[in-house]
Image (tube, rainbow, N blue to C red; front, side, top):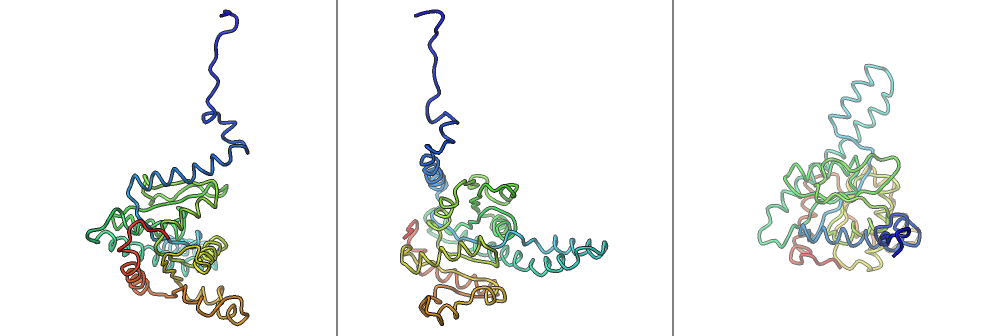
Length: 274
């Protein structure tokens, strides 16, 4: 061996950051976002989840009240502060419902693994409220975050061992719906609507065969922005498709509906996703 040309060790392909982050390695990155959550869910014995979706813009009542007092004092932003306070009821309802569902799940006897764990997109607003309510009930809580340029990161109420960050929306959506046994939608924007319509499409087409109760919470909002009667009238959906949804404004009513559905359809079948 020449002393002028020593042996060298090039990086292995899976440790080569230039390659791993290249378009050619995209299938590997996609597969990683399927396999790593799968491994972690199995490690922590997560059998199934209850999903919460809704606006990231809503805040807790005490925060909204403080902002309103500040707006009154300064004379600026009063209208927005008043709207925030009105919207805070959805934050508090989410927090209360997640707490009740987690306490119920924790009380189940003869359960296989962790059942009906509260899961969100890990952001602020309704997501934070659901993770917070579950955490305050001494339960595990899942956050499936997404890398976005205008968000700081995942909210602090997500359990550390079940805190995820995705690059691809579609792999994140898979892990939203695959283990889910119930879905609660609070008022929300484009993201919430996207998640709602994708869920309804999978249920309507029977691509998702499991029973999945879907609760629309906040009838004032949903009656204005989501007119299923008009879709039936125009013939774009069947009348029975409306039965895929349950509307309410009451935390106790939502809790009763979800737990009755889960007890009948999901409780006897831990880990069954279809």
